[in-house]
Length: 129
Image (cartoon, rainbow, N blue to C red):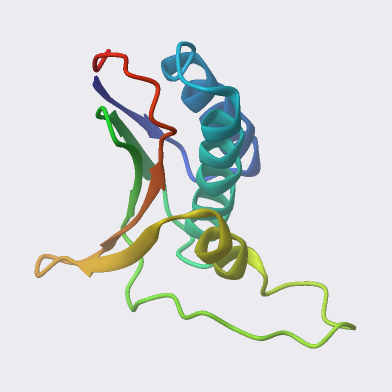
């Protein structure tokens, strides 16, 4: 299963992105859905806040993992930070890093980037959706 949706660059789009992921992964193990929703939320918020951009989310499920991709028009690659306890922001990619099996950034020659994360699925013995 693979699905994608384009969202406006607004804070309300982050909530809509969470709902999109939840809907598309309705038959996926609950723990993977929870991780996917949190990762999508963090990446979508980064697109809105730091790239000041509309974004597209792509979710793909295979028998072994779920991949979340967020494409935006922002320049530069996001970096993993170590914020001090008193800092209010800067933990999004750290959360992604902890939840995902792997993650990365693909910068596009025409501008913009895709930030992706793979979430391992438990071995359920079921076929791909």
